[in-house]
Length: 338
Image 1 (tube, rainbow, N blue to C red):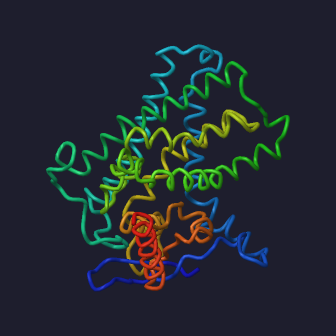
Image 2: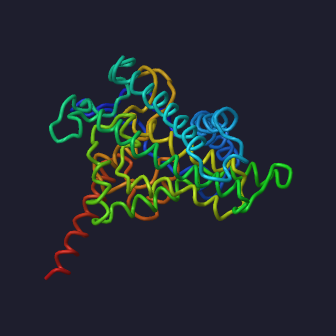
């Protein structure tokens, strides 16, 4: 895959990558060892930088802001409040920091910004009259609250020895393997939940709120209806079933909580056009916000969308396939109704 550093803009000035999305190297047959190693350890790659960043958040939360497991055997307001304040503070620092750089300080102007249109300053249809204010409210009031609720229940279950458990000493191979696998597990869960949310009853009840954001920004990532937050953060339930260490659940929750900010930043890279920067954006998900009916998974595992026929890489050919698919679906509905 080429580095997305060329200045590539359409007639409206919108930016798009100068490459088409490819399957990750381990999913290409026949597999190539060097390609797989580059995908796993390269920069940017599977481990670096973003999954390592989210692992760093988990380490900070684990070592500095986690009550003793003994204290979490019973639900008490004190330790639950500590977790809530930690999640709230880190979310404000991370989401707010990205928003500050890209949209308030305009640290790189429009370089690598997908759309030339910014989130509107004012909108009567928005809660609190502004997209950013609405996004901040739902991210913090609903998102952080439900995130904390899942986390509190998970710690209570671990503290009372009600979950299958492993330690580094008992199974170091599985301990490391599960850390590596958690982002992939998250991708599969996200795709399944996201497709469910596009079922019309759930879309009208909940998911519409997230899709009010067409011109996305960092705070758009976690701006969801409480019903959607309940489904989205349910990914941590996998650790209620498979043998895990509590740190695995912490990493999973931090990945769920923090990854939407960069994926919705509205920029492909931190840097100046024409120069190699740090890839931050998720162009495939940006296209999902633009067209709604494509790219239900994250950018990290496009094979699911390819297998399901919902992949859009930004090319005219992909757009035609999407248009044809939606047209055929509409005809089928009309035929069923007659």
